[in-house]
Length: 107
Image (tube, rainbow, N blue to C red):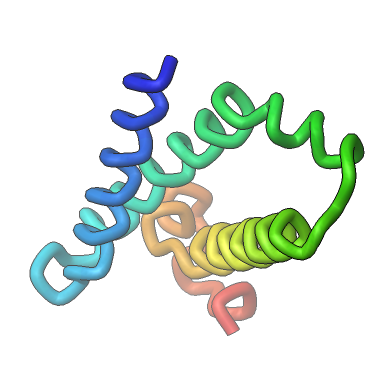
């Protein structure tokens, strides 16, 4: 289990770093990397961290635990915002849906 989680974490880290190389990879590769990252994000949170989510309401909340939960919550919120805005700005998705000329969602 730990090896699977570590492997997924390493692949997600590599995908994030490759996504930062937008000028080198281009838009299509950037969006495909983001889609892969989104899929691994779902696996990471549902399959690997469901026990952590289940224990959020149990136990005492000291300073360290409160800080950890707050940081993780903010990271989750930031990731979800990036996923929504990335989906709205996706050129590949716009082409697939036939909304290529529609700039309203991208604004």
